[in-house]
Length: 458
Image (cartoon, rainbow, N blue to C red):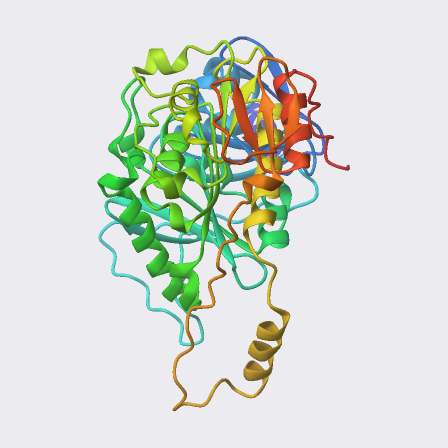
């Protein structure tokens, strides 16, 4: 009888340990139910999956098959996270120390990916196995490089790239954070990759982009960041074994303080390289346009009632530059959002993406089927002869926009009229619309009648 109490305690301890282990395993396994997170504003939001925890925040999906979005830690109620989502809170504690944690919670369609083993401090590097190649990139599916002190990432399309789409997202220069889980050829950016044959390129400025009101020098392409981007493309051309990548034309989709400003200023700095540009809800559009940059199709989206450029301390917002250069008849579209504020939203994003689709279709020539057949034949025969001269760059030559085929939209009356005299001087209330489809979208957008895109098919 003396050992009965200790034996009972030992048995109870074993049962408790087993239950605890089962609980931990159930938390670590992908769930098939929605994950509820509480925001810093006290509102509870459901997510179908939580992908990763990074030093900046989490990446997540709100609906199955929907876009992967980034949510910074300051947008979450961390006390509620600790109480309600312990696994995610534990990942938060690890991520704020600089670690990126693969979670993959909430989705039954994919298994969690094992995290890469971390090297032990002071230990010699492990010898690579003879049959294995050293990893070429830190991010699955992306090439990465550094140029001019900035980090650039690039994802090649399923087929040979015919152009580049530079994605500049967000206020603080951490654009890669918003799309690092994008899978090639799928999702909202997949249409660009597959339909137009574009490589996706983005960046991460680290701490250089932080600051509530200041703007990093990166946004001024002529001061060095433009050359850094082109230098990064040179490196990616070598890494991807596509030599003409360094010469391919570039489209820009830029949003907010850093992304939109860089897109606008690069377009003014090297217009002959730019297919088309979308600059949404930004400012610091300081570069003076040239006759060449005025011919590049560009959509400037701004909120009708936004005062954010003033809070940022920028004198040159979309409203300002559109009025300033209207008389020079730029191929620019005034995207004034009906009663809009300073933030991005689903309708703004939809309009920007659809405009870019149309502009790329107008500017990027169709692929030469004979050249494609020749390349395929040479590949089948083992390539061109060794003594043959290297071919000229196969980068497509951009098509000029014909203003005579476009329309003029009037922001005051919301009328869209075909251009009868391309040389007629525009007023501040008038804007250029490259084709009828853009004209229809523009009219709906400025009138507040545009509908958000349908949700993805479940």
